[in-house]
Image (cartoon, rainbow, N blue to C red):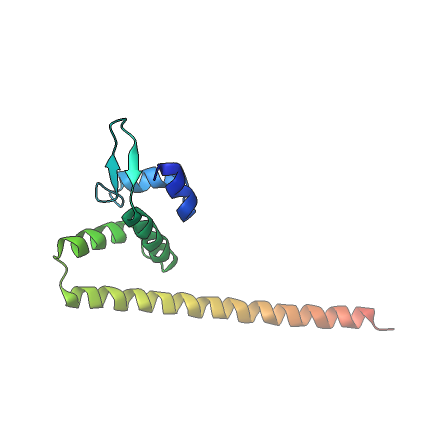
Length: 124
């Protein structure tokens, strides 16, 4: 599939795809270059982009992804290192969730106060 098809399929812009290639997150394992010089992306590219998006949503940086993916794919990452990596990321996600819960509680409180003020103004 061409870059425009890959972009549409993964909801990632063409500029972002090119950026990922420059960063080494998409490489020759993810496309074949045709005689015309165009890249023809394979299903591994789709899977890689979905993984990148999920990892970003979990708070993993592109630098961390590039390093981890290189080590994973080369088989040089020891299982204990994988475990440590995941445990650290889980802790970071839990911290983000706690922060969001605090923000939600604050907003719910402000909503309740505003509803009470509105009700007081609306009553005769």
